[in-house]
Image (cartoon, rainbow, N blue to C red):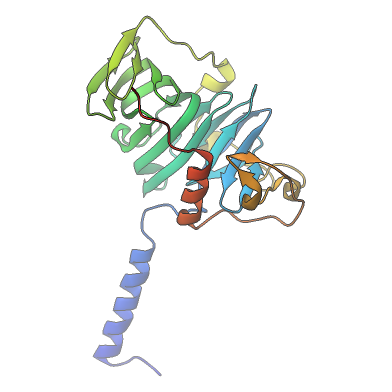
Amino acid sequence: MLMNSQGGRAWLCFLLAAAATSLAPEARADETIGLASVVRNDVNGVLVSGIVKVDTGASVVRNEIMKTAEDSSAKLVFTDSTNLAIGPNSTVKLDHFVSSGPSSYGKVTIDVAKGVFRFTTGHSDKRAYEINTGVASIGVRGTIFEGEAAPRKTRLHVVEGVVDVRTKNGRFCELHAGQSAIVTDIACTPISGFDPGFSPELTEFQEFSQLQPGEQGIFAAENPAMYLVPAAVVAGGVATGVTVGTQQSHPNNSTQELLLWQASHPPQPASP
């Protein structure tokens, strides 16, 4: 039936408006938000569909949980050229990415569950980023800073710029270039210094536009299927088996992924 009446045209406009609304600036769960520009040894991405081996040039997506093993590390470069280095035995969730343009974000949340990290801002508004640890939220003001997240404390060192730290109990502190601190849920205590020991390869700033993705998109290995581990065999965050099968897509079910994240990171007891 042709929609040549005013009512038909109005209905068509409504459908188009609804479609436009569905394409909100929030990145889809399976949408690429960056690349792994450096990968050393054993680095995996935890998805609802399973665990994927991450190699140099592999894409990373919103809500992906990046995990590094012992003697392993990675550097992620997001589409706005923000650089995030992750050290050994670390777990980081790329939680919340809201686009504000082709190469910028209006809001980004990164959750560091444990391990060492280095954050360098790119071309988005510096205030768009928030980094959460177990004890505090860290706001960014044109910054390079490094940290180590543990269950009851976070060590921070500001290399350049300023960071705003708010603890879980509402305490606030401001750290400037050259300053270091130990942050708990109730205090922010200055310390003499903190160096996570990142190599120059991980600290060198990289522009996203200069990077090349892996030949197979989210998988840079020759046979990506051999690296898939179904989510059903993940217990306590540790894979108990490997299945060789067909390539799986990135997740689009945030509820399942939240359950997976919670299963691999049980709540920590409150500080005494």
